[in-house]
Image 1 (cartoon, rainbow, N blue to C red):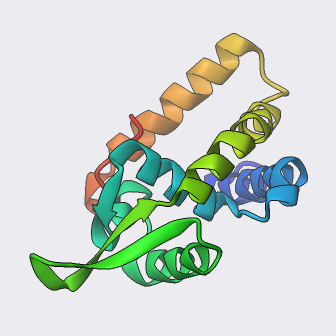
Image 2 (cartoon, one colour; image 1 turned 30 degrees about the vertical axis):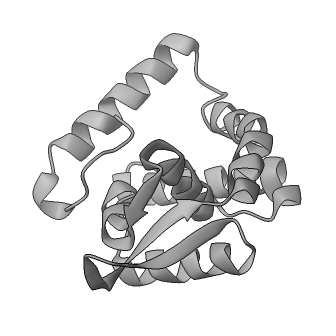
Length: 147
């Protein structure tokens, strides 16, 4: 198993989620919710389909996460006046403030995930993951907001 990429990727994801929860648990935000808040901070306003693509997630999961963030008054969702089927989202002042507060803890979790690698190895590992993701565009309709 230790030579199978799928197994190792899944384990690394589990480790990262655990480290993120340890570092950011007090904020009651999941890694997925953190990604949505971060995407909204970059875009300012976006429809749910665009946000789903930004973080490489399906619309249904994205919509559920946005509803939970809206229930906590971290995100505002409103019907798009130009397309009544779509909802536009933006950070509330509370959401923006939370993102500022959580940023340091989230960075610590990201560093801890790769902490067993040297700085050079970390950069190389990130580059290799980016190359694999970029080499498989047909398996992901997401436009990469965070390149």
